[in-house]
Length: 228
Image (cartoon, rainbow, N blue to C red):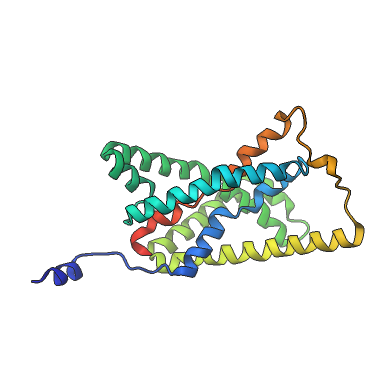
């Protein structure tokens, strides 16, 4: 049997993620509208924090992900990179921390989604957001559905990301459009003073961490490297 025939006979993952699937994955992973209101509450000065975050955090993160993904293109992402560079133990530790982080991250996202989605049902259903049994049952049902879709394969599970990214884009376009309309019709109360860095910059420094948190996620695609 030739080497080519052996490679074909070996189990392998299907490459189901195309270019646009990756683009939409990065949108849903990085473009987080939820952090915008809490950051914007600190005023125009946070514009400088966005610039600093992009230059000193997001850009270097992107360069590191591109370099490591090119050097180690297989499945695993952070786990694979740490394993190849520092050995099995560091690979395990990186993978374990990455996985346990998701255990703490996913439940609040589920509860947040349930709490917001009840308002779609119309007036009179707001009390469901405070109903613990409803939140628990709905969150577990949603988690089970997402798990089943991904067990079926990334060819099916990727559509969750695609739909989420499209929805995020629509929501962003609507918010930006409304902002432009309101600004043109009623004007704005912003002044140049609001863009000055205050003497007590600690009052806005807490937004820096929130902004950086909203810019993470570029490494996510590399976790599924063999399926791209």
